[in-house]
Length: 280
Length: 308
Image: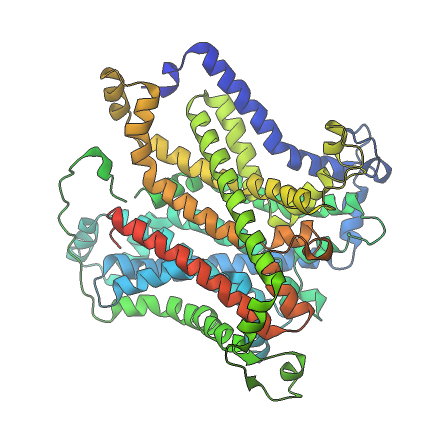
């Protein structure tokens, strides 16, 4: 039965008007970002801000990409986020399988530890991680961004994937073994494809937290800026006298669009994944 | 999570599981290696540094490190600014959590009341806000509220009112951005939870003549409780750790540090003034607070009968 039918008509129309208004308000910052990126320089800084432009221009984007190494920063960001997403998906899949499909000593202890690990404030660890990365010779390399983010994505990824692995019936596993499948064959050819939607949902979180990273890039990439990532590129347009808002908005747009695309692509899986993770 | 609200469910037979000997540890090895090296060891180091004298001189090797005992903590607890920052952090996080939950839950309920098109519009807008990186979200919101060329002051006739100048208006501006980018998680999760409630249960309630409010209180809310616990705890943890928004929007903690929260305070102490041990001590305080939140969370999970 369609649950929306039970609401009486005037109320439903009011609810729909509210929903559309809220949607417009929520979308407005992104609209304003893209619009300002497309406005010619003078119009962006204008005190008479208008919600449209009659003469869109790509000048701000051109300025962003002409700025030293912006394309490089973009690539670095993609590399770091991509490496973290792939590695954490694989490692978390194995770990989630271990804690759901096997009974062993310290299993519950480990699960509690994974939960507690999620709460460790990443920012508080900047200081010891800085010295660790220095000792490992990773300062000013992409490794200093990949490694910590991998560690921070894992506990949540394991915790979230657990529900998906658990949802695969045990009978399937027994049947596979009866048919003579080896353990690793079951793991990669049966379990992995079944859990894949969960991996996608998990990856969204790893991707976002890594792509968002500002603190580590700021703290660990100090002298070799060619190893820096997008958030740092953005800050170039903040100037003490007058911020280059057109440039900031264009760089912001370039930084936001890949995440938006990624989100739209996995949107269905994300919503069902959240439902699965919290209500398995 | 078990749906214990629907009454006594037949206890499921415990799944048979293989012991697997060494196999589970083999599967766990990569995760444990990464977490041990990059999470557990740094936490230990954080604690250690907080008991040492560790400033630029020690880092560069010019002077030997010396053990301070609780000296750093004593210095920290005597510093009135620390208490002020701690209070600001707690109040700011509480305000963010309450606002995020209120907006997220209200909109989740709204989503169940509308047809497909408005629902899709709201969903897409929320996904957009959710997907926006914290840095770009922060810069866009600062620009929206810019006294010279932002549309908000124009729209509300605020003239050249500078949001980042005053302490409370700056915190409010950051709060708007935090709520904007974190309500979608709450909305989508709670909405998924509401949809997961079998419609027969709601129909039965309607047939029994239960009012909307009664249905919500006696049927929907108990079934949503596990989800509400998850989103509340997640929000507390996220909002307590806000760094990027404060750093970018208030330019490193506001005028004269008026908008500092613990995270930014620790960062400034460590990396701007090279007082690594004080920064670490602040980090330990944060860690302990979040650990307390986690323990409460674990107890709630246990009480709900979550099988670990």
